Length: 363
Image (cartoon, rainbow, N blue to C red):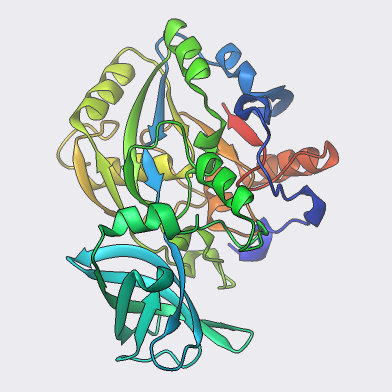
């Protein structure tokens, strides 16, 4: 299968730069897989499409303001880092944008509150922009205040590159801190939001609960690989970056109970799909192939057509980039031709695309 099979043209003005004032007023393109029919609705209408006994599964990861600015010690050259994951106490994997990054250089970040030393430079995923290399590095960090306190006061939300911001806009930065976060975010660790969850409010979840639609949470800490383009010509050659996940026992029990009662598992976002399908695949030999057990690990599962889903019955998801692994995932669920037809309809109807944009419900 060719990567170009998942290409489409998106007018740039349809890329949402800001969220709507009301989360539930985002538009929702409902796709009925059985008939191929489309219905143009709002997220507020979601209860009309779910039934008592269905289970919504959400990702409760919390986005950390993981981007820090600073300078090289000694030379004063400007640097930018994006913290990805703490692998040992004080040791972090990060993306570093700086000229001539190499082991041994020292950085002063967040106005000198964080001292960093580059321990290693990875060959993975480097790029050049404006004379600066942006690549993966291993850093040792030193700081007097707890790091997460510093990030909350001096870090910048790691918005995707297609959302344009000026670093000096403090008001917009404060808005993004609130809106580039789900209302149920609990476990810090993501550097990108599980964007389908941005559409939910407490009121909407309460309405669904009163209707008999419960919700449960998994955690998958979304990494920068979520924006990693598929650069190979053949889909099968693409490799996903591994991301950490946790499925609690209470969630595993609710999924099994829902299955036994013939309710539907409705995933809120692609990260939930990857988590549940990873766990089901990894434990096929232990339990019934449609069950999910409590577990934690790392997922590098790449879902593309054809794929047999073990757990997920329906999906709420935003609109994704052309030829992206996320577009391939939704095509595996609904079929490539139906998805591309839905995207064409969304473009005609002037839907808003990507992280701060509208969504689709695949039933």
